Length: 446
Ligand code: SF4
Image (tube, rainbow, N blue to C red; front, side, top):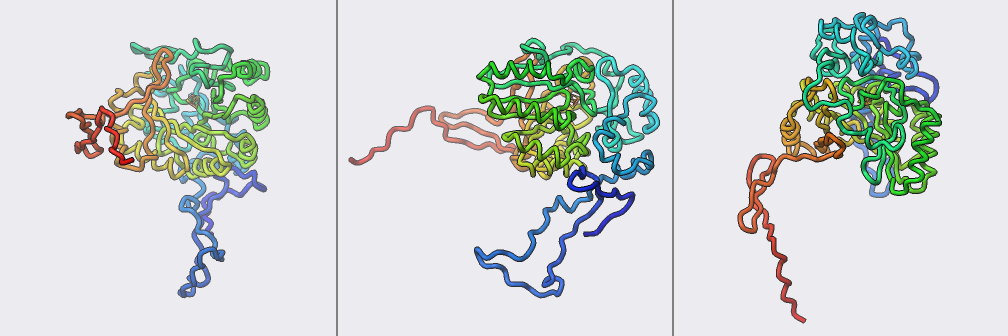
């Protein structure tokens, strides 16, 4: 194992070490026989191998992103590794206003004006870790556009609404949305470590109105207890992984006590904006509540850092199935190549690409929204051109509370008699014998 230094981070004690706390590049050691240049006898079937299994390719990555190392050297040189790798420190040192951010970035006039005004609708908040991934000079850099406000946020376009999905109307108790018959969304609180400028819930997120108080959560839990058709609970917010281990364990154990709740999902962006939060202790706690699934919100391949890899690896090692959610955003990820790179990184991170969302028409989102045709073009550019697992479902959350509607490019080009004409990923047309009539029974001899 070769240790790469730079301002290498000493490990934290024991297994409480958060992602990114060591900078190592592991190489696969040669066996003594291989080092001597001799061949060894392969074990027979059933015979135990004496050779260690090779490390998977992803474990040979550096454990810290070079952008993070450079950023720390420039702006946080005096912050010891133990603090940088402490998720509480990351949260309490978020960059939240013009004065703090202009020390780190060269702001455009538009960003400067927006930062001076921001906060009324959706606060600004960026963890130091995530800020390290942001270009200091390029206001058009994709990640920068997703977390720094722009003046376009303050302009309402036709068709936009504060609550376009009508969640408030489907809310029988505060902070709980019951839209589909068998599942509910429980907003555990409205806090996120980093705020996305296109957030669907910008009307509530970050305002401190949805608190994780026991009294409010009990109301949601009580509603779930007395509604036996609910078999699936999604915890979201705000970001549930910014709760303490104890609070989250309490919510999960209360849900586990409800016999009709079959499984629980968490929606989070923490593994990519605050990977330090994914500690072994958190994973040990979460694995007590299986079946538990996690949907991770990613936007761009630039988020797939060694730290995010390690965070997702820990969750996957805890037996938690991971899926992704990505919002299609103009000028951020609205091209096939960017999306393909993101989906490929996700597979390497053991995260199954799940949803690609059309951006919801919240107030001030026109600068982020693409035509529906763009999403279809991206799906068409992926399907057949890469692994099927790498193709997410493209969905529109219907304004007014209609729920998610999947959209697919049109692969059926027509019908000729009993033949269905289908177009493949290369544009070639094929016939499928799709007889409308039931086939005649075979003439079987008695
Ligand atoms: S992480 Fe999710 S809830 Fe939080 S600001 Fe981003 S989109 Fe909104």
